[in-house]
Length: 63
Image 1: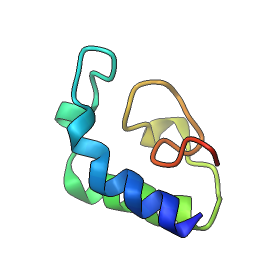
Image 2: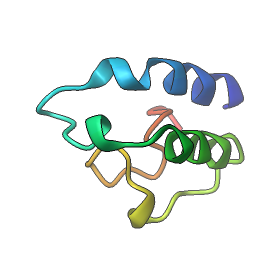
Image 3: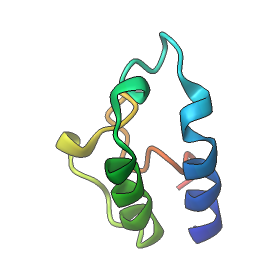
Image 4: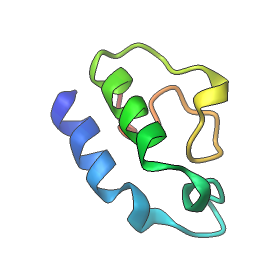
């Protein structure tokens, strides 16, 4: 889980497209906060959405 969140964080900004409109406007501190919460498997709140798809773990899809 931790490795998946780290890989997702490293590759996060490479996913900028019209499919994921929020990536371009996401600050680094918010992406790192989502990564740390993702390492604990605690679902994030909808207000912490960083990709625009309302996912529980936006950096680690299989989680």
